[in-house]
Amino acid sequence: MTRLRKPKLKEGELRVYWGREGRYAAPDVMLAWQGDWGMSRDTRLLYYYLCSQHPDTGKQPLFSVMQPSLIEELASRGYDITTLKFSIMKKQLPAIKEQKP
Image (cartoon, rainbow, N blue to C red; front, side, top):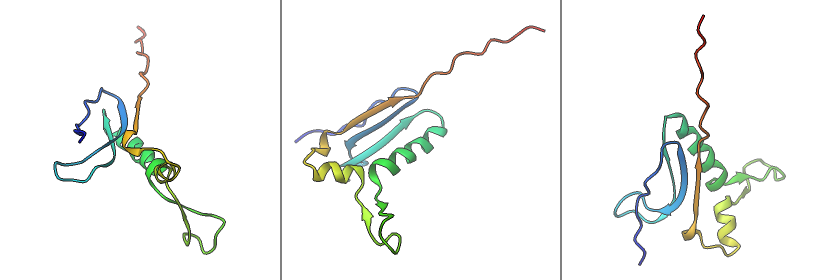
């Protein structure tokens, strides 16, 4: 049995991985971030595109048929979701020089 550990994130890092929320929780796709509160919005955006089902706009009435999420689609195509690892770092902004009057 593989031991699932909480990752150590760097400042400005957004990560998707296979893990569990608590000691007794079932393993699932996890999203984590380290940085300012603005990154929580980025985490929600990533969750929306990876883990959420989206309505099939060609079907009426709308929301009557949902398309699978990217994670579900990959699993149905035979990919092992337990090996999922994705990490992205926030771009560092250049320092602004102060001009003397």
